[in-house]
Length: 374
Image 1 (cartoon, rainbow, N blue to C red):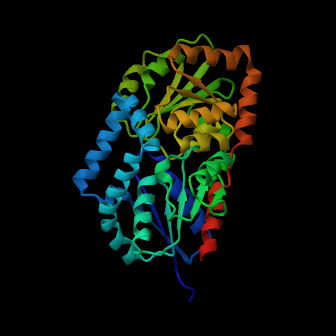
Image 2 (spheres, rainbow, N blue to C red):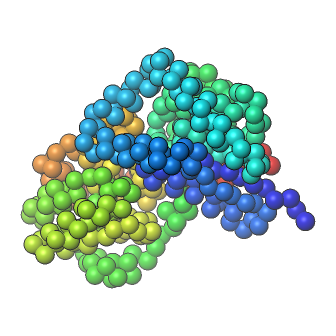
Image 3 (cartoon, rainbow, N blue to C red):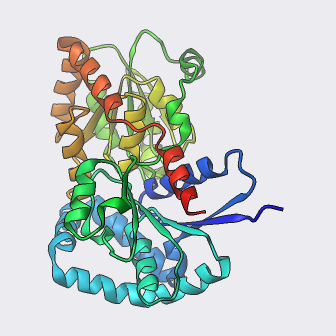
């Protein structure tokens, strides 16, 4: 009987993208391979439960109410020696809780899709507590210094600029693979668009806008929806509120007063289908959401990115001419009119550029890379 090859994924529930990235690689690994076992771990499992919950709640509140504070902290953590020292102290404390878990599971490879577990695992390697190969999969289009650990010898990044940054900060060039952000293989498939439109009772002859705010629904969707409602062109709109029940109820109450056709959805598992039938997405620029839209060639309009990695992701996509940015609802109206009425050729350019920098097979390629350590 062949030996079971165990792979441990460690992520963090800070945004849904880090976990989705781990799931995409895990799915690719397990496909048609009965000798592979994968296990998902949440870094907060190694915290005191009340502390982990409090940290997550504070994080979400800061993003919602004081995003500028997060931006300052992001920049400080990327530049300050004191921040890096603090990181080492925190890692040394939390890593003790993780050590027993890893030793008991005894994985052949550890895959980290968030910087915090990467730091904990790096600390364990440094202290000779574990010798398991570790692959760090960065899930944005930039690398923060909190990802950088000389103890981790294998990195997967989305683009060459990220590889160069890692090399400049002491990571060996031959340990860095440019493979993209791992997305589920369903984002490389073409669904039956007519059937999806029919199920949603939408018209194939009207431009469709998809509004998404991430798993937590952190976007002023009511303001954006009313903005689109007031554009004097034919539009149909899909709004996905994720786990944000408050904004979902608010939009449901608003729906009866709208003239345009609007479909309001909560947490769903068929985002790929909604993206496939849409002509434009208005969203937050989380790394995973961006990677998924690129794979489908869906033009993206990014609304008021939070300072930090969202800002950096936005700058990358705008520079590649694969997305546009709006910092007010008035700008949203101007851009939609331009794309759908005044300069429709720009929409085609955005589609082509999105596909040009997409990595639809990233999950499968990363899976194959991980299996090299078998």
